[in-house]
Length: 454
Image 1 (cartoon, rainbow, N blue to C red):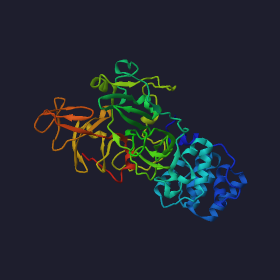
Image 2: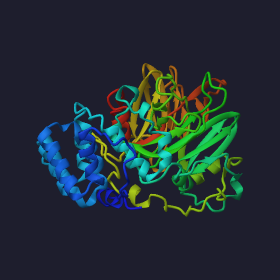
Image 3: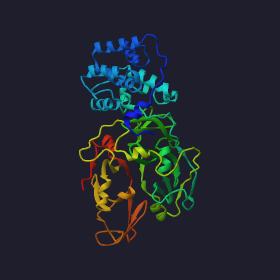
Image 4: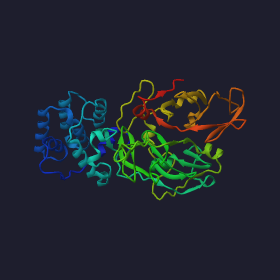
């Protein structure tokens, strides 16, 4: 997979399809549609009509034409420039950033049938998510014009549902410095290597008696563990990857209602569950090295290579170029005044608030005493392993001494995956959080959250 935005965009070419819509069409829709499906004459007349009409509300639809209409890119871009007065060029990525910066441009209604036709021409199964009744502007929690195809079909990135696990002692395929997602619930310890999860981006499991799903967005570097048993629903939700993105973040879907969900927030954003009030509860998960995890959790089980799918699960294979690059593969506006777009942060969204800690803060100290929403926290991190764990700390202040965690009285505490345990048996609970690229935090929680400054 190429990691450069321009070459990736250039790979995506939709086949021309006959219109399945009514013969009596809105002339704006016909003009927009001509960008991909019209003859040369129809296309020229369509662009002239849109220019004469003079309203930039068609630019979101023309952006779809720009992405897939390779042979007409220059002329489509010229029409968009005339309508907006912006000399942005012919790059779809740059125009998408302009669109994100200009939410006052409300798309013409023709966007819905046009975008549906294009995307259903790629995969007819996308109709599960793109029902017209759910695409009205007042029915969605995100902007239809910013939903983009990620280059795969529905379930093209297959989830792992109750996958085969093996004892840690039998995982000879893993190298000590391979990173894993480490999970422990009610004493049930599991490890899910990133080199496998990068190909699947989702598992649906029951761990320690708790139904959970790990939603891993490789593009935004975040793996979030959610509880999937939701109050008022008889069965746990089961999730998959839709094939769609929003601001370079995966849109997952539940298999019961086919609602689209924001992976970063755990909330439904398109479909039947939009106004349900559901927000998935997070569970703690840590990224760390296999050597560290198996040493502290010798009884852990770990994913088997026998996933039922044929993939190259070698170390450093999946998304190798993307992870090594400072570029994003898909468009998202990012405030880079303090942090670069692919700098790592540890993000917590709990207690009615959101806060992020730059991972590089843990190069200066292994322990940070801080708070979120006036709730005192202690964070224990290792930037080399990309590992951060957070716990409530009450009135305690912690430091590291002789490799162990000690409080202000010099008493040593025991670190477990679920609690900190004091010398008198006092327990301080773990707080759920996850690693993420800065750009994802900035896009989804930057306006509402705070950032640790050191």
